[in-house]
Amino acid sequence: MGCFLYYEILLVTALLGTIGSSVGSDLDTEFYVSWAADHVKFLKGGEELHLTLDQVSGSGFASKNKYLFGNINMQIKLVPGDSAGTVTAFYLSSQGLNHDELDFEFLGNKSGEPYVLQTNVYASGKGDREQRIYLWFDPSTEFHTYGVIWNTAYILFMVDEVPIRVFMNNKALGVPYPERQAMGVFSSIWNGDSWATQGGLVKIDWSHAPFVAAYRNFQSYQAVASSMEGSEESEPLTPGQKNKLDWVKRNYMIYDYCEDKQRYPVPPPECFINL
Ligand SMILES: *[C@@H]1O[C@H](CO)[C@@H](O)[C@H](O)[C@H]1NC(C)=O
Image 1 (cartoon, rainbow, N blue to C red):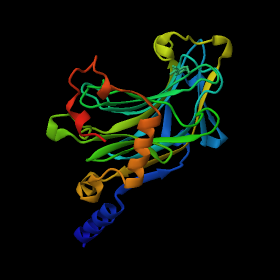
Image 2 (image 1 turned 180 degrees about the vertical axis):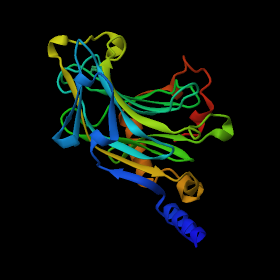
Image 3 (image 1 turned 90 degrees about the vertical axis):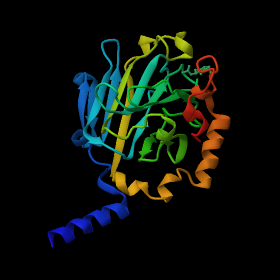
Image 4 (image 1 turned 90 degrees about the horizontal axis):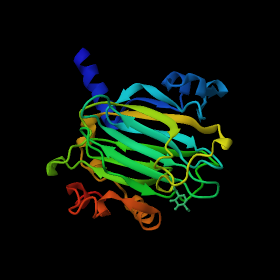
């Protein structure tokens, strides 16, 4: 009887592909302040969160939960106006040596100049897999959704409904893949003006501080790893999504480590497989 129930639950979760989800839950219950409490504000009864950077400090928050696979996303409205030199990072990361990490880093710019979104993948402590794109909208005027879909076969980086990056499980090629350790969700805003804007040429103009990034509607679906081994899950994109990814690459991609011949005379093995 107990056994029956157990299998039934397994079956149900396998069909749904998720265990434990939180949809648009309060940010003050999902997250704690990890850096500079006096620069972090929870608003609207926890529905919205603001991170502030000024000359005194940056700030950050971290999730209480950790995830091993899942679909995790959040709506963010970036620093408006003159955001040059600021970096707002939204990422998943495990801790310790050989950590895994999936990064979104928003590099600010002067008023009217485009933000750059840099993504990176660390697996077993090794990153150096930067890609950079411009966005097809101004990310500082409205909230947009940023997140990852992460299972045993692939990682998708999503902006709203658009896949901007696919990182396949290339274990077979000897490329480490994040699949052994759970990751927390983090965000922070900090002074990156030594490198972020036009390669560090444009510094923060502190007369425009404080710089504020806003967050809302965190969604997390913890996936069941084993249910992901199935056939359809190993195909990361529908044809429509593949078209969108190609559209991003054609029109908005400004840097891809796979194409950086100075850095990698021979591109890393995953470059030949990832979409
Ligand atoms: C800032 O604007 C300049 C000029 O349009 C552009 O070259 C650069 O890529 C933009 N973004 C960053 C983060 O430097």
